[in-house]
Image 1 (cartoon, rainbow, N blue to C red):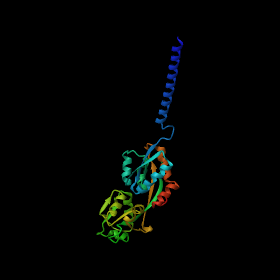
Image 2 (cartoon, helix red, strand yellow):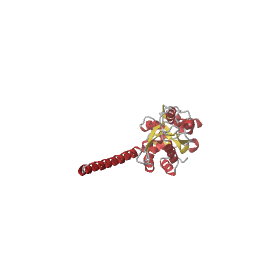
Image 3 (cartoon, one colour):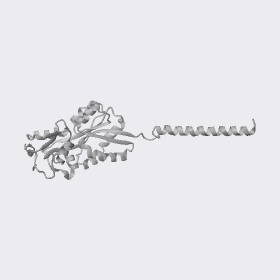
Image 4 (cartoon, rainbow, N blue to C red):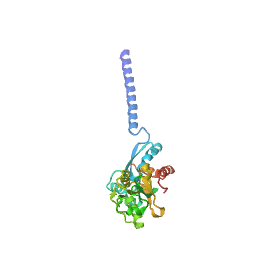
Amino acid sequence: MRPARRRALLALTAATAALLTTLTACGGSGADDANGGGGEEEVTLTVLAAASLTDVFTAAQELYAEEHPEVTLEFSFAGSQELVAQVEQGAPADALVTADTATMDGVAELTAAEPLVIARNALTIVTPPDNPAGVDSLDDLADPELRLVLAAPEVPAGRYGRQVLDAQGIDAAPDSEEANVRAVLGKVRLGEADAGLVYVTDATSAGDDVATVAIPEDQNVTAEYPAAALTDAAHPAEAAEFVEWLGSDEARALLGDAGFQAP
């Protein structure tokens, strides 16, 4: 073989080897990227939560993201009875937080571990800011002229409210029964009702949009909020970690600032 031709062939072989090395390196990088670049996999955690947790859990999103940047919390808020129905129907979700233990107990076979009570709450009477009906106590809720709104009986807040009224022998007939406690609050805020029974935390979130009439402690009830990861969770480890975080001092401080009581 002539020297010139041999030199050309050697150069071509070297160039081909270099190209193959580059392609192999690029292919390896692509595989790493497909697997998350060797870092933590990003996940979206779907949490079904009681409507009364709307404000505090929305605030928790940012706080949780600071400590768990690989996890995005996606909340679905509704009445606890609606959330349980979703779980029973197989709706995709990772964790469940209800406003009472009885509702959570109804899906015990669908939770991955013993539920953790993360907070407690109490009821209060709310009225429009000027309290046009002059509501001063629970007894006033029996006035047939009063436009009263309560959560429906199957809703935890509705059951708690009727428990309070029945214990005091108060026969109060609501003008409407709502699917969740936030709907009760909404009607009072809009002036569509003279009074309603909501959680203390709901009244706190409404600020000056409503006035409150406290219910004496010995006439009130305590609502418990259990949280649990679900057996069909797409991300069981992350769901369990989130539930554990809800019991942390940091989460309890956030809940306390929103008006919830310690568990």
